[in-house]
Length: 329
Image (tube, rainbow, N blue to C red; front, side, top):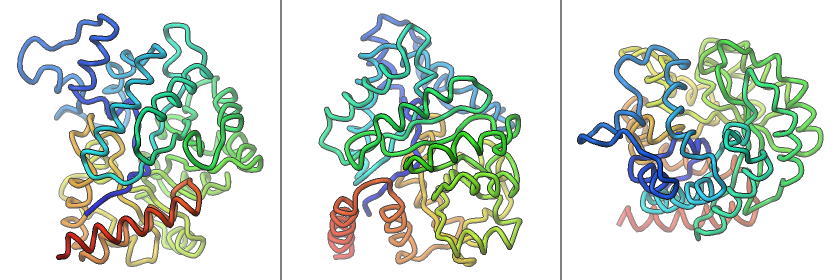
């Protein structure tokens, strides 16, 4: 099967191989003296107890993404990695404000990422992330509006960060303003907080929710999501790592699908969680007892929900179905 990934953080996709290349470019010394040391530094450990602990894993990859050249190369290398994983289309998201520690402006960060995007033949777009708990989001919103395009660049805006510490309701006005000015929205919600966070996100006008798994505890919310075709970007491995769902408990994917909620499967942070999209789909299949038809439908849902042109969506549908037919043979 081929795949579509709509929820992929750039700084969460810095594998040891990519990290070594970025460090070489910048003469940065990595914790890489013994086998496995760098992988351990770039990925979640066994003692991760919450989303806040998980977010601490971003410190090292973010430190490698502070120059024009490193951002450009990271975007290129992540796309090359996705091609090798049979990913047909992806939307790479990042917070420009996190890559300004060495003097770049947020706009220069976006320009570097756009250069990296252009260096790969992959069908790929960018989503800019606002961050909870910072004062730099107005500039991020402005850049999303300025660089917004239909394909081959910035196609949307997100809100990410510590959901339990900084509630979604505090960002509704900011994001709704962007939506009213034509920017497609996806919002992290219902990951480290409950259904009320998703209800707040919906007030922004978003058409997609990052994670959203706690919708399962509110039947009226699931009905609303299904009726209005709001798509959840579900990331199983990440959800267990952040304890959004506890090991041994029922993963809510089957309940969401049975309620008619539109769902996609994504990696979130493939390096930090040591995963890939094929693994996430297989894991989802196991957790929710998915049929092959349902697995294919998850990819078709992702294509329909993508922040891209209708022409690209149709190309992706045809390509996915051709590849699926070949695998079936």
